[in-house]
Image (cartoon, rainbow, N blue to C red; front, top):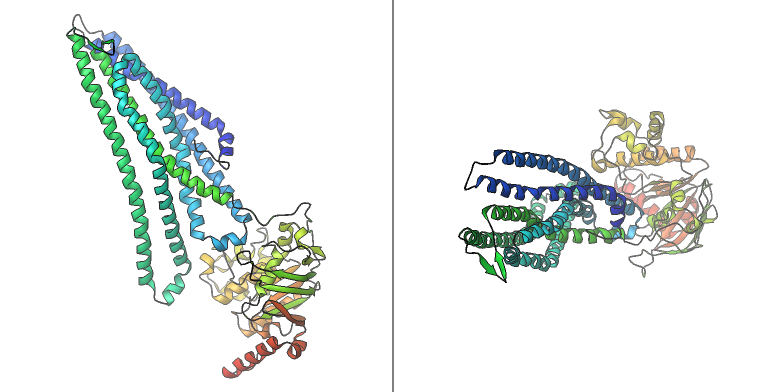
Length: 601
């Protein structure tokens, strides 16, 4: 069996299915061993030197063979239903565990691990494990139980002939043990190369528009061909070794059959001529029926021998795949609820930072935010501006508890965020991300993502809030329009506004917009900001912006520079005290003059 702390629980959970399936297999194996005996009896009944053939005896044996066939049919139905059912449930259970783990794991892990690699663990590795826990279990039972019983029967017929035939049999076992580790190494390399191929394909599909825009189709095809060729070579290497392994086993099986036929024919001839052979002090006596029985037993043994070779290869692959899956499931969960966590039922919307410092776990010696101290009152609409890389997005992301923070530095309504239940914190914040990620679903489903029970009237109201209702109604299927992967069929401005509608409809005490109106025109931006100030009165809203026109009419604006608070005041006051804000105002006016228009302020 394939053992490991994450898979053992499923063996216990589906023990009933496994026990029933294995019992059916054992009964099946035991029953089919009567076939060689009955075939030998038929040969002896037909091969009579004197008197008529005992047709009644032959008929009785044929009826027994029909009964055996019926038992084998029923047994195969049972073990296929139970063992394959159990293996597929194990695969489904592991996939569920991995999916839940992927939701709990920290952002750092996804920064360091490519999506393509993770997807290969969810697909090929789990399929490899399912194969071993299903058909692999069948082959293990057959290659052990059936082999032992057949060899015992062969010994009972003639132990000398069995001893001669066992020499290549032991070579098969030794060969299997020798190559298992080597095959595991080859499969590991094959899976790693598959990860790289998966990564390459995933990046190209995601960035297909960029590739087309830069006319890089040919170069990307050549690059993909190189990766595909490497994957092909590693797959061929595995297949080549599998073929060599299987051929050596088949050669050994053929050698055993040759020994049985050669020595068995000699023993039968000696018995018929009444000149028996004596080996190892044992007088060999073997008739035609017994030799027929012996050959049929060995033919029954061929499948377990082949299964033994298949199990070795399959186990090597499954061990490698399980190791990769276990490594993912064993990844430490850095973000978790504290003991006696405070579950926030509601928020007024007060946000406080006290001498807050932050550095990403991957670069602990490079702080992104330094000594941030400020208070945001409930109901305020706050703008956040600064140069690229000043820490604007990082500042709001810490409110979601995506990272572990220093206790006593960030507070929501006066409660330390590190003392709060993570789910309750995230449930009280609505967020419009910078990349405006949309799901490949209907427009209405994307807007109602926070609650699938929302009515169409609420969805339309949210679309009107984001000033995207007219665009949606112009679509051929309106709110039922399928928007494609990541909203590929929409413009940048439409994606931003649908993302805003999705966040607004959540009606959270805190709303965060991360540069979410950068792709819309002046009039649309003004409409959205007006709706925010009027319809979210009394609720806290944080607006990250790359241009001052977006925040010029907000109550207060936070200016960040090199990860520090440069100023936090009204827009009018910032034009006097903040060099960064002054420069942003100047550049925007200059831009408007160059374009021949007027300043957006």
